[in-house]
Length: 530
Image 1 (cartoon, helix red, strand yellow):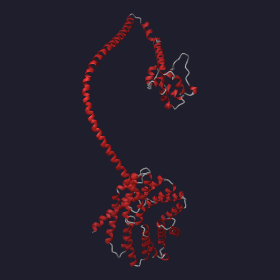
Image 2 (tube, helix red, strand yellow):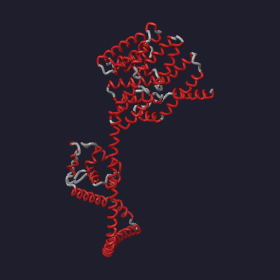
Image 3 (cartoon, helix red, strand yellow):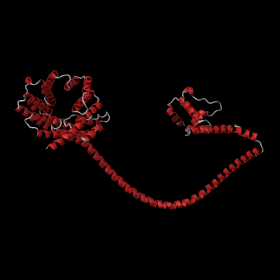
Image 4 (tube, helix red, strand yellow):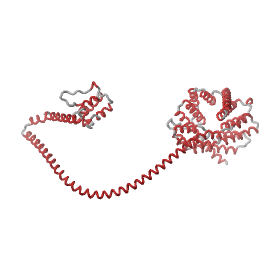
């Protein structure tokens, strides 16, 4: 038995260590992945809590029921079950209440009754909670328990006001809840977490949402992200953002609260099913369905009537929508099945058609052979023309050879100065280039007679190009004429116009700076000129 106890204590310590390690808080755009991963690891978190519970159970077996240790261990079991399984938490509170009554421990009995009444009111057992509180004499109550006593009554009447169908009683219950809340604030220390919480709730209720957010900031700064308190504070923060109309922040803090609940294996929660409702309203049915199903399973595990009633309505709505979506998907799949069947039939028909076409192709091949004979005759004619072309090339080569012999003769005769004069002269080259550009300008303007006018329309009025007398195109216009013909590589343009590449870049940039359209769109506009 001692060995088992040590084993369970070891598991509990591992679990506590795992729970105490700082948890990662996902970024605004990463909460969906973090929450999905946590839900996938849900069984691991439950195993940690179960290990702690089993370790405490073994200690209870060893402890005598007459000792204060028995009372303390029952209280710890209640703490483990309080947000995990409602029935079990009530069972251990009831054991402690009997223990305190049998020994005349009035303070311990009052504390246990307050805890049990609070848990009962949260679980929808309003009559039972009221009976427990009526057995407590507030005038004889220990001062340290007065805040818990007033908070329990405030919570009970607030729950009654939320769930009653009687309008008159609702107003009465809410009035009593406010009255007990006022009494609570009078006995609470301003340094306590409950004081800050109630102050925040009061500010939010009176519409002072920015002030309530500042109070929530203070609460959030004082707690770790891996505690039940963090889940509660982030849930309250989500409600503030809901009132402010900030849907993204509301979802984010609901997700942080739900993520903490899942990691701590807390089954008494409202964050996840509230988040599922928001996702449903946004049309994310698949994720909403997964979350609400998980939340419903956790609620059933917690086993509290009020929680089941809270979740049942939205579960039913999401479930019906999800089933309708599934039916629609099934109909779509059936449609695709019919389409595949029809396509398969068409494929079979296509195969038959191809087989017939292959027969026709066989016949066509014989016709093609006859056509090839005719083509060979046509090729013979082409060969004749190619021979003529080769002969012309040979003649041109002979002319080049004659020029070579003339140069050689002059060199042999010592007529180097005359030869150098011929080589150094650019007259022939300049004449040929001038003739080339004139031919280019004439041919281009024959294709695009309005090019100069339409090109100028792309420039600012004061920057438009005015040609000299007798000039068809200038250098700038030739550059963009080549671009209009599809030659937009600056090195090719430079080679044709006998300029450096940098000069062509500068011309292009200079003209674009004069444009009345976007620089990026200028050359595209030139390409559209007809």
